[in-house]
Image 1: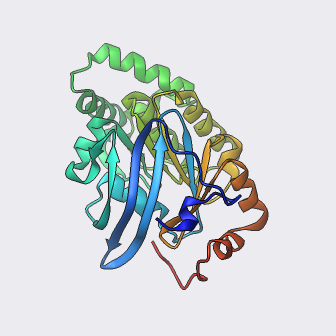
Image 2: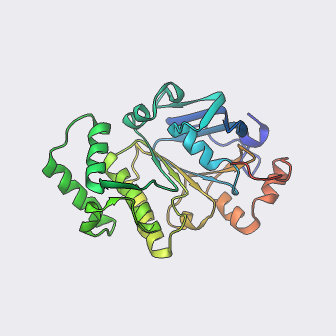
Length: 274
């Protein structure tokens, strides 16, 4: 672990987690034989929201997909444990059943599969039991109402023709129904107007609890006006370069990433990193 990773913006070591749910150590990964993650160290605790920020191409989404088990991404070094279990010894569905959830930046359209059927199948698989239809329908209606979603939404094909706001609401709806213990939210604020951002943020805040760890990946600080993080990490050049409190996000908004890059002793970017 580099000194830059160990220090927060005041030059002090951040406090160690008392109850870590996700621990990533010196994680390295390639995409199409190009190294994107270059030694990521990151810990997420239960009951806390960790914001992972960084410029485009710094490796934030790559980290999310590696943890979720996307086949395109190849782990070349380091390790990650979730609830004490080796993440990379599990298949993606095993990670989900253990309580890991990824809200994707660009959800896939699945024509012909209704939202209701998809969600009920997913809930049954993750909970490991067949949820009675009436019980599921009641829970689905309640959660949709909280997210200001029209009842007819559940009859539509999965993500087909959805607006950006509808796609993100659906991701939070999944989160509410699946009841995960670790939520990785990849650019949840991408493409949202102010009203949709507020609704989605309220959904995340409503689901916060002492057992849930959240890794909130974002490029901008605007979502952090609605979801207050406990910890902010800054990712640069495929590594977590700085870690601090919520005030670090304010510093990024005021000064941008380059001063932090220089403070961490990292070279100027040379191109897209993934």
